[in-house]
Length: 362
Image (tube, rainbow, N blue to C red):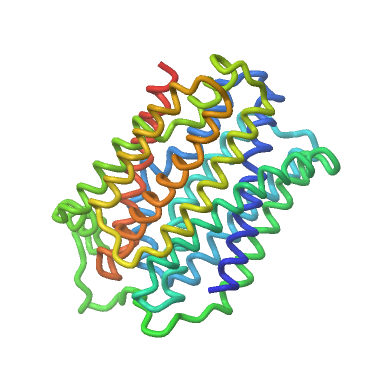
């Protein structure tokens, strides 16, 4: 688990480095902020459209092999982008194609890596493992955003993509040496013999995962809470930028300070969320409501100092809520259905996030 956490920290730092640089690169190529949003939407679209099929692939294939191959493929895409940037051959069309390919691979890579991390610990420690994963994600985000500016400044844009490619290969090289934890709940590869129950058309059924999701009231409630929260409350990356640079008369430096406080709050929340042994949907809903209330108050902040005081607990509460919700989603279904259920959850979250961005722009 320690090796896996280190590998994920490196990978997350590389990913956030690339995402930061990609936004700048799109602006350089097109000069359009709308094009930046389009590139992000193209990369996120596969998770909305085919994430259930990616989850089915994770349930069907050996998990370690699936995660290692998907990481290697993501590394290949990053290296390809680095070469195109270095040769000055990257245009908007090729960038969009590469973003779409990345999004498709991520529909398999996301659930595979999430469930692989759970396999490394005993079943009772899965919520803590998810908390560790959230902590690593937040720390990698903070580190990657900081490294992006340094890397581009000294080595150029191509170097940031190449560094992300190396981070993916590092994860792929660690995976073969991972061993399941004691009493871990793992899903063996689905047998192809006649004794295996199959869905329509003779294949392992995506419908099976959808049906399980639809029959579980707590999962439907979790999807509802996640969707409402994403539509109305999780678009503060945009709304806070408008608040800081508009009514509060701050600049890029002020927004950078707010973003740093958000990341610190996310780290604290991940640590607290990892201590939850049996998180519930009711807890997720209560925390989401508390986070929404804090956002309402933060929106009326008379100064940047007051906003910073409110942003920290807001980020903590929402990080705990996210960690608890992820724990419910990953532990509620039986092992052989977890990939497909994660796919359903990812689709609902992406749909809410997309609607939330549209609402913010309006």
